[in-house]
Image 1 (cartoon, rainbow, N blue to C red):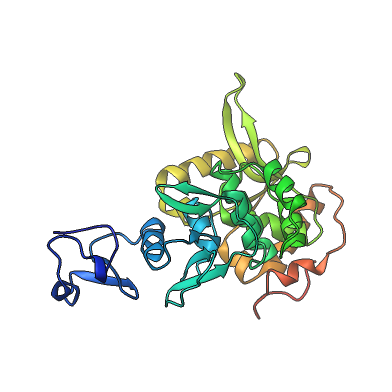
Image 2: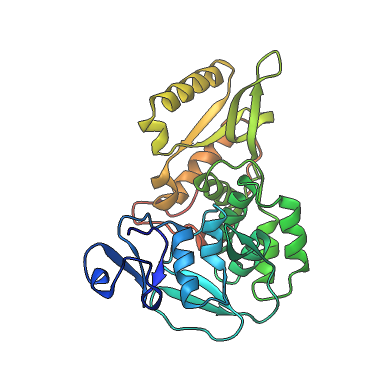
Length: 305
């Protein structure tokens, strides 16, 4: 009988034998844990499989973040926090529970709360990745900005200082991880923080356009364009209409793509700073903190102009 739930060799579902496990019908998730090869390897399924190895554990860290629908770097492990024995199993990374963890149950499995997940990951993520995580948790309505700030302020564990700094930089209404990264490049370089998701309204008050990052008082928009803007005709048409409206109403647009962040951040900052000067804005000196989080490649310029 097919099964989409993981199981252990010692607890085979009805109709499945050891011989079946040696065929291509099943895949091994972890030592002694199997699943039907047709089953989708979702974060939830992987977590269920890992908990068969450590039934008293709680899903935590990166794995908990993915269960909450948040954005976090993929390190290839399922993360569990264990109160006692920490099994050493390939594909599972276990953490010792030094103090009580705030946990709940989600779809039948124990998982650290969104706030606890943010605090746990403050010990292992970089500042930018932690802000991306926080933005995405807020976007998914798992937490609020105020709740993250309150929890980080009270946190005295490992990563407390980074948690407090990152929580103070988390914002609501951020549409994507790349928009979070673009905002952090600007803020960490010393530029004034742009407004997130500024809304342009129709005369009747209905929202007409949303601007990723902007300085509304100065008529400047900094916009990230991902592949969906190219591949979707609907998105492309919407972007065209918005940009034509902005042009007609004397807004300046700076468009940023993935390469601009990952390969040429200094040149990207130069473009943004030049656009700010062109709008008559005051442009502060460059703060080099951005370099710790956005390394340049050889094609990038040495210094933001």
